Image (cartoon, rainbow, N blue to C red; front, top):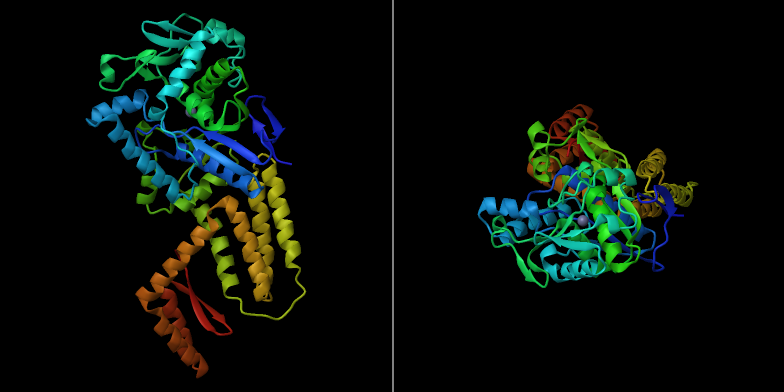
Length: 476
Ligand SMILES: [Zn+2]
């Protein structure tokens, strides 16, 4: 039975979608004013794991992820760059899509841009005004949190804290801290510093606040109540807290059934920040020579509600994990034996599959799920000498089924084979291999050993099979 930890109720809840086998997911997407950083990527990798596991479990998923292309930061930085808001944000949106692709993160089914949903935002704001949950002050429109029944429940805010902070100040900024709880802005009246960024609407000339954007885009694409809302835990307050207040205030219905939040990513035990020099984007990782798919492994292998303490040694471990799969698949590819044996491969593959699912059903317990897969690989490796072609195919199938969830095994293996082919061509190792075989046939073991050493210096291992020798890469 599939269970998720729900931030709102702070309980592990059995998952039951609104519509039988269809799951509606909204995950907060990027604010496209810069390249996304590792912390952001962790959130997108988490949603990808969630979505892939739901699909693996037989659900069809509609996944919506917004692009925030208008807010305080995009306006500020586009002005600084001298570009129009659209030109500026489109650049980073494209880079973002490229980042997802290189980490094999599936694209959302719908990726709405905030600037295309102004009409929907205005509609919600008008509804809130009508219900007495929004009011105008100095031209801008604010949400009245005292009118909201359970304001702050998601973030575990005490009523007392709400009272203490009701200083009468209004919050205009898109981002603020708990100490600044107050009525927050829904619609910001145009000011000179906004330049040409404004919309003329029924509620005046201006632009939306950040929080209302996600309410409008999620409701329009998924309905007034949907199944799962995801995001990093830093979004619990104020962003998701305000999303609930606005959405439920406007519709009178429950907004979301399951709130799933991923924990932070630290770098060497510290919060990532530009001033500490520990701020990384995917470009930084690639420039240092690391494969984005190894970053995928690093981000996925820790349970989503545990903090990841990132450092570059993580790549050694990720590479070791990748190697386990590469070695297994390569070993299976070399099998030519057809004779029968007593191995019960079905029992091994079923056992692995069951353990994997049991762990993943428990709020996506990835560490246990991956441990089950590693145990399976160890068992297979012990028997690699007797496994036949048919069994090898069954093992391969079960690994690739699990890869529908993990999303890195096949890609990494394909990449490995390409690199192997390139290195064989570049080093012309085939000639040495042929000479070595001739030497072996002539029982000239001295020459054969010398040739093996030469081949190893070129960066290969030799595997002797029934039909001759093959090479594999020592490093890739
Ligand atoms: Zn959002």
